Length: 205
Image (cartoon, rainbow, N blue to C red; front, side):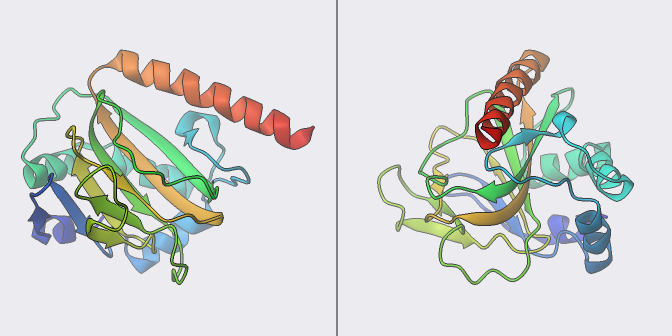
């Protein structure tokens, strides 16, 4: 399902931090399978993979993302050793207007991979921007529309600022992180699961 050749051929932007953008990382045939079995997510926020229900096609996609071939491709592309580093996957289906504020990921996340699973994207908001600083959302190196099968991967340096203009509605994204240790995975799963529980509770009240 993964177009590793496209990833291997893509150029890495090194400044202000290393990142790579790969349109078409997921081919059309694989996208149809993944979309059919994508988990139903009616609430905003990130949901740990383990808390979701999905079909066999999506499960196969997740297994490839967690496989050695993909890890080695990311290691070679970003020049980083991820051997024996655990992974954590969260899934988003909906965006809130307040999402996308300028931020860096937590220090325990070594590499962030985002794979987008949306159709043609015409909205001005929701396009992730790789930023030069923490103050100006318009001072960006690159902008990534969250369109079908696009991959973005970056090393989580202290200055890996990113964010996007407000958007509200369906915005499907897979986030995979290689993290420092298994304790991070456990803590993040608990945090996201508790957050998801209260979101569902609030929606049903």
